[in-house]
Structure formats: structure tokens, C-alpha cells
Image 1 (tube, rainbow, N blue to C red):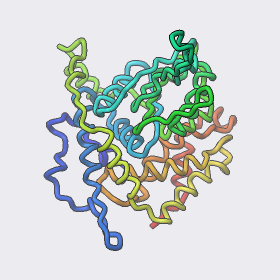
Image 2 (image 1 turned 120 degrees about the vertical axis):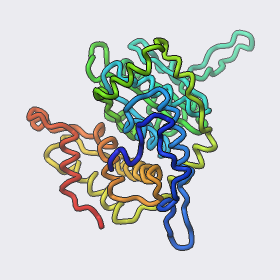
Image 3 (image 1 turned 45 degrees about the vertical axis):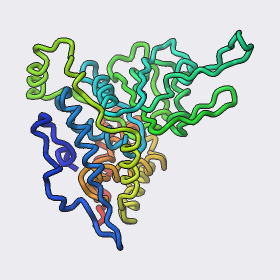
Length: 350
């Protein structure tokens, strides 16, 4: 799926006016019911408009963050310094009227600094649990690969099960719970590689690249009299927990036929049998492709999944879950090459 089908990167006043557009294609007849996905389209349009007040370019990344949010997943953003990884994440949180926290991962960060700990209260001679910053609806983890393995492991339970267990007591997190983590792939001094079990808990890994020349010019023009980036204050909340939950419920009801479920299974299975890979994708990847394909369909104004939706989400779902065979890596093969080859050689359902 072309990213332009999902997102318009123009200025807010020039964004496509979906409210006035005909609703042809927004509903699909299934038995005796219509599923109206226009609320999802409206939510996505509102978030895009707010982000476009500050962010220039990176349209594909914004759409993928929305897809992950609507499908209940978490996102890992990787890119070189200075391309707005943290800024985009922070502004994404501003578009939602929910609790937000930011955790700067460092080599000396301890698990208790993330999930909280029990503190002895001298007044009543009892231990009192103090919640960590992970107890928020939207959690930005900056430079996630700066913290050691024991601190990264503190995220395993909370990211997968939306709960924290400390001193034998389990505490549930409120809805929504969305983790957006960033990491720098270039500077490896003082970093710790994320284990496969941690990577597998991110529904998407989004690779950000440098802006093109036109976007670079627009960035300079936008901020030439705004050194402090005060325009970020213009970004307003356009949805809350209730509206996000209703949109996510609609995404869950998007129709996907059995042939497309088989298509997803074939793609993931091929990652396990191809000689190009040392490690293939898990069943969690299959489920992630199904969920995110539904969200991609809803954002495109459809209540049914088509093969293009699956192909669109295949790379961000799989790229961090596979490991190249050593000999293929030495040949210069990349995960993107392998995923593209797998998708091309599997027959598309009709």
C-alpha cells in the first residue's frame, strides 16, 4: 500500500477534507450489518492535522504509529540523531488527553526506577508501594538501548500483559497503555542490544530516515523565527481514552477473510524455512500482522482487509523479529530484501 493512501503530508489547512468527501467505500455489506469506520478515519485525520502543525515529512511513520496505537501494540523507533524521533513521540502523546510519562534510559537506571518499588514508611512502620513512571497511559522510553538487560527486562511483563508485579503483588495498568521507544542505530558506545524477547514485544519497528531536500527546506522556513520551537504548544489533544477505545473496538471488527489469514500464515511460515534467515518470526508476528492490517484498512476508510494492507504492514512487523543467516549478512543482504522476496514469491489471494 502506498503511504499516500493513508496520509497526506501537506499543511493542516491543505489536508484532505474527508468530512465533505462522499462516504462511498466507508461501509461494506456483510450479512445484515454495515460497519461504519468513519470514526476511525476522523480520529486519524485529527491526529495528523495536529502533528502536521510541527512535524514536516515522516508521513509514513505517523501512520504506522497510529496503526500500532489502534491495534493495541507498542512501537520501537530507530533513526540517527536529530530527525525528530523524540519530538514526534512527544507530540503524538499531546494529541491524546491521557497520562504521559517519559523515561530517559541510562546505564545506571535500575528496574525499580521504571516499575516502582516498596518504600519503608517510618510513621506507620510499613512498606508503601510507590509507582514508577511506567504507570501512565502513554510512555516514551528515550534511548531504550542505553539501559542494561536487567532494566530492559523490567518491561517484559508490563508491555505484554499490561501489569506490574512487585513484591508478589500484581497491579493492572489503566487503558490505554502505549509504549513508544527510541534508539540510535549508529552510536553503539555505552549501549546494550535489545534481546529478541524484548524486540518481539514491539508490534512495529519504524526506521526513520533523513528528510528529502524539499522537506529540509520547509523545516528551515518553519523554524527560522522560532528557535525555541514554540509551535509545539499549538498541538492540542483531539482524542481521549474513550474515543480511542471506541476506535480500537471498530478496528477489531474489521472483516478479514480466511484466505487472507492463510496469506499471513504463509508469509510468517516462510521466514522460518528460508535459508536466508537464522531466526524466523513467531506466532506473535502473525497476530501482529492481522491486527495491524485491520487498522491499516480502517485508516484507509475500509471495513475489510485487502492484500495491500498485509503487504504494507509486513516489513514494520517483521523487520525486527528476524535474524539474517551469517553468510547472507556477509553478502550484504538486509531484512528488507528478505521480506520483500518472501512477499513477492507467495501468491496473492484473489
